[in-house]
Image 1 (cartoon, rainbow, N blue to C red):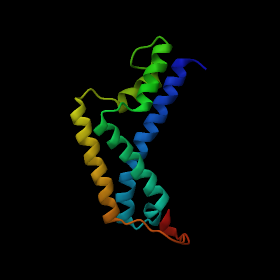
Image 2 (tube, rainbow, N blue to C red; image 1 turned 135 degrees about the vertical axis):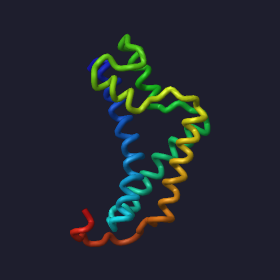
Image 3 (tube, rainbow, N blue to C red; image 1 turned 60 degrees about the vertical axis):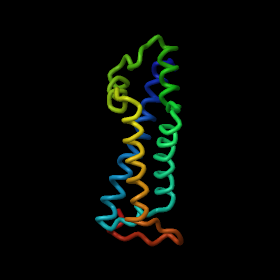
Length: 138
């Protein structure tokens, strides 16, 4: 497998991570409003919180994202610059990377992390026996 293809794979994984964090919050809010029980699942909510807290910690500590570092290293080994040479890699990069000062990212990440923490108050996690599915649990 070529380094460029591996870099594109890392970008895809990175995009999935970003999607999980952002769409997870949207799902929790919509699910709360619609009465979906699965959005109160302890494992889902714990994984979601851990994902954004990791991003917040990296931002506070000034640490580069390991996925970004890995992708950049693979791109260099492939003889590429910051963006993938193919269509998918290029647009996935453009989708999740922006050129803002680090303090803007820290502010956004911490605000988003605060919103995720607030959902634990708004739609508390259910711990205990799983409930039987009903037609509204989809």
